[in-house]
Length: 108
Image (cartoon, rainbow, N blue to C red; front, side, top):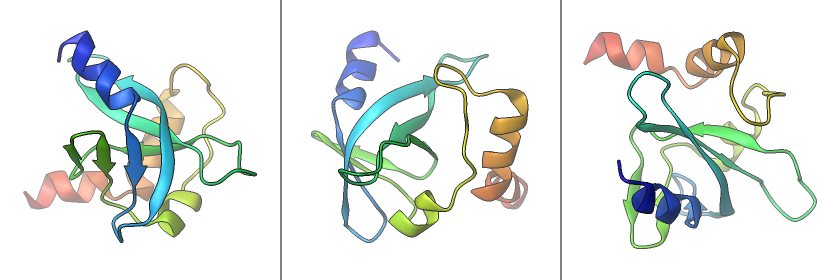
């Protein structure tokens, strides 16, 4: 993915699976091996400064809107990742399990 496309994704507004506006995408996190965007972080509301990691799997990007495949409640309940710049292997594994991404790969 070209840097310009990553920049557009990072400037997007995130929406949950129920059509509720979440806010701006904070950061785009790339898969280590491929360099493909795999995660974004979003903050949920004005008073919530915590960045929530959300996978891009099953999401769609239209114009300047990123439609995520999870509800706001699911995103809010996701495991906290303390890392600012890069997910640790443990954090990523916990998030993959939480978002049921391993099951998806097996059932495909």
